[in-house]
Image (cartoon, each protein chain N blue to C red):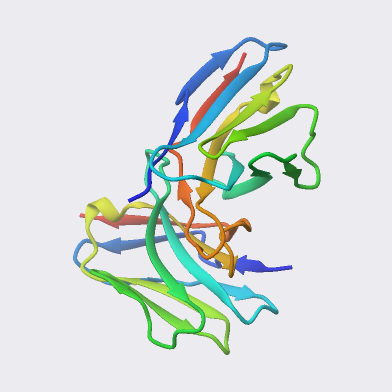
Length: 115
Length: 116
């Protein structure tokens, strides 16, 4: 079975600073995908970034980037130039190579951006 | 991008009554939909996987007779909470997948259920 671990229940960062959220996972699968989802107070799940396990290049989306270390089974999220709107719960998630299987979520990290 | 809707967004009901929550994929066909439950300040807990035209697959510990799931078409799945009790109060979220070859799932906005 796959597991996803987020070891930081809460984090805070000053506006305009950079913060890194940690995520590790465990799987015996060779082909899979990793995601970071953001859940703001509205509770709508928003996809932040997606990484394909077979790609060595780290995914980036504007101010969001990941550090994907496949051998170490680590998938951290870096948020640059933090903005107040980044305040939210962040969930790391894993899925096998098919959309017909459910996402496996970590417990989440609550990020607060402080003005 | 793909859009998934949920209805209602918020429902309050009396203990003992049944509540139906709808999950619709608005601009794509969803061969598979997933139902999650989320308690305050916690992660999403998978309740069941719903495939169009077949019976749902429930996770261990989820009562099939209490949480009835129907996936009658490629754009609609429903979750019915039968004989609701206060402990069923929670936030229910659905997600939808276009199917094989696609890893991305799209989430609905969630339904807040309060049972009095």
